[in-house]
Length: 597
Ligand code: ADP
Image (tube, rainbow, N blue to C red; front, side):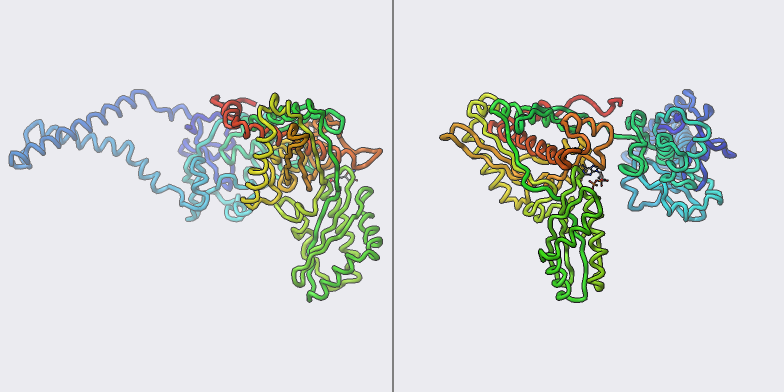
């Protein structure tokens, strides 16, 4: 795209040449070519250029063919006829013209080409400015943080930047509506690096305005458009200090509804935020088969969030002493009262210790009411660590989390011990429904489950992955209901079992999920869209009568939905329909890249 077509407001004045304008302060390294009608190339010039190029190649062809003729006939090369002499002169003239017109810019571009560095590949399309300043060639990388300290250090805003700069190739973008003159000043100072982007909320006292200013500054610095990423329609106050820093907009993800899921005698409409075609339809079909067979039932086996600090002693013996102390039933009461004082809802359940030499890992487990509980358990653990320092002054707390928790990493400890809510969910699917709704047979499903979910996963060395698509469902419900999507890692641990029952007539299916980490308060759950989805499920916010029952109910809905989705996907694979349906619903010929918000 030609930068000259970019119509957005220039900030600085033209330089002496009138061609280049500093868009922002010198320290930003960004220059844009000003829109200038005089710079437009007239049509007649194109015509002249085209004629000279044609003449150049015609003459070249003529001279070369004459040269060949002379070599063949052994005539002297330096003896020229009048047409040959004229052609030679015309060829020289056209060469001079073309070199003068295109050559200078070509050589300049070679000389001004930015040095290659680790960003070069990533930024090739971005045509980021290269500024030659005080003999230093610098390049602003794509995606570079607005508050990049290196920029501030190396380019003193007071010193003028080098005059030569290559124009940034920019895209057109929609400026946020309602930017005032004062906003323009703030944008300029963010771009110049004098106002840190992260301080905008505090400086302006208006979260929406801060997002608008940051967004515009980002577009100007990167030359990249954020059109398509909406700014309006979001409550930026609601995320201040808790969900997302330095917002510039929000990503839209469609929410589909599957169901009703008939679970423990209740009907649930399951919200799923996803862009994977087939997923909602697949869950919907599984729900239908379950509902027509009388519904599914679930049991919460355990409910406890974990956090495991790592401490170090000078000897393994001392580490072992603390292990015995923490695991002794006599000390539990004292430890739990210290732990529980951190919150009305945190209740210590156990401390499981693992030793690695002089290092001890203390896996605290506690109930957390309706909160997913990471903050809560961390506060309780901190209290206990402070308390232990009195009796174990030689204990060195190396980290409040030592990965034996284990949060957002695949780990056998979660698969075996559980984390969050451990749920088992089952259903008996009538043979009729297997045939009519799922288009397969009980035997085919049982055999495929054994070969794929059990043996196949064992062959692959799976860790908690004895299922077909648990993570699809977990992720979609987590995003819709404001859970932490990164906890999909362990929350998707699931073993799917299938068995023929009632003399092979019907199918017994179950999913066992030991580490579903969900909450209905805290984190993203209180945001408007997410809490609407929780409301749909009847689990919005804290349950005042029985704290923890909302989050446990949500965990059973997750497990019930996984059960339905396992049933549907396994049936599609057994019936050989998987590829067909994905080609139909998950592959679009439409060019959706231009879809407007
Ligand atoms: P998390 O521990 O999941 O990160 P937070 O600590 O951010 O969650 O949110 C839990 C907050 O909600 C705590 O301040 C807690 O006191 C409050 N809260 C109110 N009602 C409940 C409830 N029923 N269960 C758990 N926490 C609750």
